[in-house]
Image 1 (spheres, protein in one colour):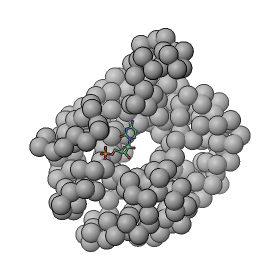
Image 2 (image 1 turned 90 degrees about the horizontal axis):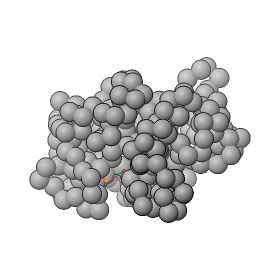
Image 3 (image 1 turned 120 degrees about the horizontal axis):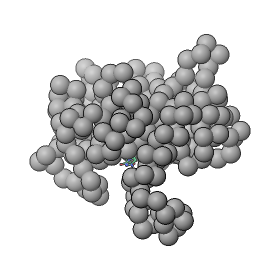
Length: 232
Ligand code: C5P
């Protein structure tokens, strides 16, 4: 599986998103579409970005009963996205149903990645709000193992968690990692950040980069710098 930089297109209109993508005349970055853009513009924005030749990670983080997730995943699969995701907290049965729904009649399917614990959840919140009293890292690794057992392709995690995830689930199990900043860049609201180079060293398979590229003076140069540092 090739390493790649995924650009988080956190815009809320198609117009702004497409104007941003117009900057890229030579390369076709892998694009992440999140809830904000998808809820604003619907499936048509996915089709338009696909038509322009980009790969798409559709970050909608599904979590519902197995039958509902299976049917929703079948719709996303027909949209021809390349990667999508769900919450591992929905259980192994839900993840298995998701794989079933995603798989096309010819046996192909988009990559399916699990969110373990959101990076906005810390030990205190997990204990207080979710009544989970195990150490956070143990919970993350348990959810990653469940995702692997259900046949998923990987997890979204911090680059710092890539080594233990690969140790627990094997080197082929993908780690898709946000929280990436240039050494000389602004952190924004991200706390545990690593550089693209460090993410490479830690074995991340994909880095998800938003503001360091979307808000850069020269987004193409920032994207190229990420690729140079992460892919080499
Ligand atoms: O702008 P920035 O590089 O911080 O964007 C990171 C992207 O990755 C955002 O779209 C954010 O929602 C997403 N993300 C994250 N942390 C997670 C999961 C997703 O930052 N744990």
